Image (cartoon, rainbow, N blue to C red; front, top):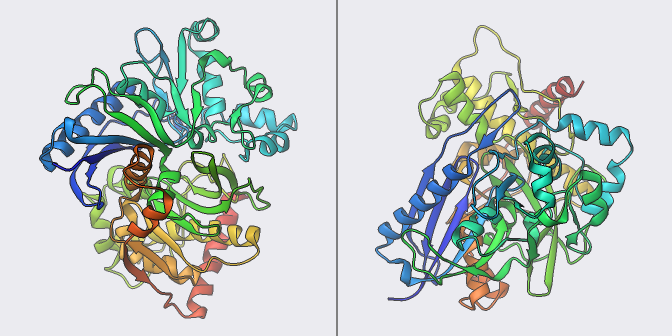
Length: 494
């Protein structure tokens, strides 16, 4: 049969595997969730073995649904939750400690201390990032300092550090390859954004020995080949890797400067193609690598809302007002508006443009008439308000509003949320036919890496529009919404 591509989308709460043919038809798909570990308030961990087990099950399920065998795979692409930090033994492959997840805030104090020392402007100039517990550098520093014997073993070259892509690459190749791609490396606080190489001064600041680091490579091209993976033959090339948000940019075909996309997942992430050179934001956004294909490099401006779909999970698991996340839209539609309730979903601090590690969630405007439907609607609106702030910051950086942007991710299927988002932004929003654009981007990169697709121009032609949301809200109503939000966010940041 015709060759197909396997895309592995390793996310924060589960792993999705998709099998796609050359025409981008999804032949098979499987998702497997895994446990979330919360040792203390503000701490979030994963077990690498849980991640790997979910990955193997997802691959098997996708191949089974597609009716294909591992031998039919042309290539494998990986996209992953970024910043999540792992440390494992090179010889045995065993994790030294649980993975510290991107949402984890345990190193906020270390970031505050470096900020007091005046290091943040220097770090921002080198990396494009702000000094925040979100990123991998302080997480790795914590592991080296708090896991018994870790630093000594790392300096002897016995340990390997990686973000999730590196760990999966290690597993898929039977421990033969320790590498990452430039997009994931750009999220560590350890890579120089201009040179796209590990920076000795940054390594010294965070106390990271070079021996522990993976090799940085372009996003498309052969990283290694499968070896000893259950259900897959040896020798399949892993030919594309990118962090989930950058992969979504590729999947959304945002290849021209100024094009933007927003992914609504556990968190929400707005990225705009900034062109071939790094851009420094004046409004709290991040500079990052969008992708590298051969010698062609694209950079991006990024704004992050740490909690988006996760707030719906909290309403489900924490408060029990819904049984399944998919029920949130129907519940929110039971009322015409939020009844004046404002929900600031700062459950894991605030990202751009505020960057308040100490911020916590807030629900205000409650009276006796408020129901769970009002709370559900306010939660969805809170996600849209966060993205509104990011888009405004981005518009100020580039000197003009974005004419339109594309959306993807699980929460982008929520029509109520998408319409409210378009109303706030006063900007048309496009949702593609296939909202699994993160996995699609990984597949594109793997296909480009093996020559299945010629390059970005061919990929751009393959992008298919789905639904368009046009602004409808009257200016007076919009301003009233924004005024309530501004009061609420001021209270959170006070």
